Figure 1 (cartoon, rainbow, N blue to C red):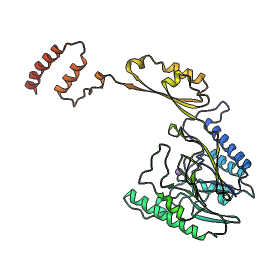
Figure 2 (tube, protein in one colour; figure 1 turned 60 degrees about the vertical axis):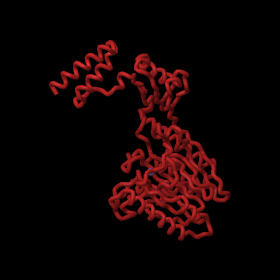
Figure 3 (cartoon, helix red, strand yellow; figure 1 turned 135 degrees about the horizontal axis):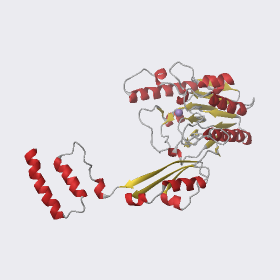
Figure 4 (cartoon, rainbow, N blue to C red; figure 1 turned 180 degrees about the vertical axis):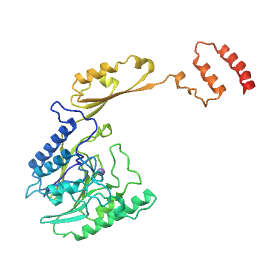
Length: 378
Ligand SMILES: [Mn+2]
């Protein structure tokens, strides 16, 4: 059986968006292209089951367009012999006990499209356990210390997943789908998540003997374990420059061979150029680009931002996010500036240091005379 793991759909990013020539927001157009590639990938690889592991939307109150896009994707993917299983991510959650957009998606198609409670689907040839995102207050007693709450939630998640595993038949493959952090997962900035983030220990999932754990939530695609296959597919699009180096795509996991395959999706590239890259005409066509450079104040005066902007647009950049100089201050201006809280001695010293036109002899003489005056009036 071939199981396709989709990335967090997050339909659709509000960042780095502009109106396309056809009136369609460009990030929506990009989202649609990737959605189309998912449908094609499911066809080409003959996927038997599609998993959408949460965060269908950026915010829990999506626009009607966004709801229709996600439901439309699931409608195109779902076949009698290829079910779609989706669950809530933290972005899809409204207040505890309130219904959110996943319920809407489920009502527009199959109940398995928008699962919001821990569930076991014991279908004919596979057991699919689902561990959707949930507000911490639903999983643990409210405690003041956020780290302690995260621990309590983590323990509860382990207990629930163990319980779901115990209900599996054992005669067919068993997979766990969820929208949580698994310990050891790294984010796009390669940082381990803070202690206030509930995490499921990787060793615990391995010990529960799932055939695969297919998760959402972390935007950087990664395989945490080969056998069992424990992985994130990441995010569908790149949201910002922090995700510049992240690949974008889906996993296909084969329950018979235990192997997996990556399918790339045509998400738009983000490119950060240094000044010398810009000079070298690094390709920027159809990218969301920014330029960062270091320069002294004098060098910076010779750099024409308007010219850079125009040249990037002429080179076919989709969107120029900005040009960000990092000015290297000269020794003089790096000195502490003078404010109301600066002492008279300190202010005078700063002033004299900046008067490069004065000889050292005069500066010393002025400082001495001033010291006497400051003493008197102080
Ligand atoms: Mn998430």
